[in-house]
Image (cartoon, rainbow, N blue to C red; front, side, top):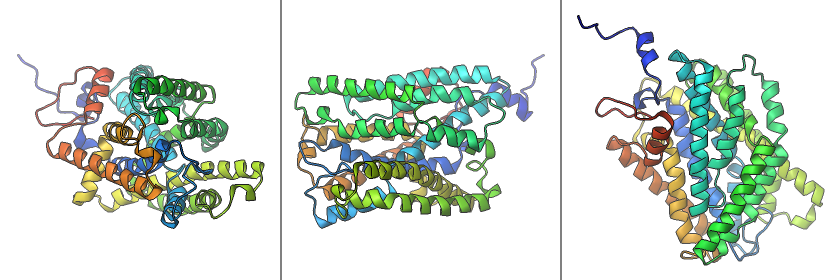
Length: 406
């Protein structure tokens, strides 16, 4: 006699330990990821300037009034706000994978082993990304930081105090890492591609070592772990007052803390007008308040998801969510588009493009990735980078026809 298929949800969950099915995904993190990719494009495009005199914010000093105005806005709302936002979301993703494994009856040890395999493959992705295209790769830094974060996934008492301490302690290392990736750019200005590969490798190795030694972005990842534990992202309707307070406080802190650095970058305040020590302090404040702003942006999208509960999201938001669902593909695609256009070994536009033109290019590149991801979603296809990483992490995963897993 053939046994009937189990219908109890817990029995089904015990058999399902693969990636999250598309229909089970939370809207808030995908909306946030889709938006932060625009922020990353705006931040990364400045890393492609070469053979030009730049200011304290890494922007050309000979910009027009329009360039300076855009620099002011981007530094106030985006610079050092995008990476914390992406890191928090990455930590949330790690915790989500671990939670699914444990809900399916697997222990924390099994979840850690799965995530170690995922992080090591992500490190390989980061190496290839840096070698082939972009010295400012963040995948490797996230891979190393994720390995540290796994030590905390099984902690019963992960308090706000611990998270704050682990956010502050590596601040100097994170600040140095960002400075290295933004200021040391010989690979961008080298017209010989193979020489640029060697130069990018040197920056990548230094960044990975620095991230590992200083604990990198562990505190930010743990904020994401806490968000997953508390359900702020998955069940935002249960946490509306806290989410609103976080949005107001975080955005206010981000703007106030970003004003001094933004004014310097926009040329309103000359670098020599403040002492070196004060300038470093202001930069540190800019980075730290960026954490508050990044968290606030995520909470804002959680509020949007709560408002849409039970309703179909409008078309633009569905396209944004499709991009967030394929964030690894979209992130890598940005470099595929940026590097040949801006690097000296390609068209070399990084030597001449005005700041406003660079920002316009960044928005255009992001829009192209959104369009591609929306088309993939309409066709029922996953992002190719996600397919490869998940295949390497989970192995072959059976799924019904037409069902996406992620």
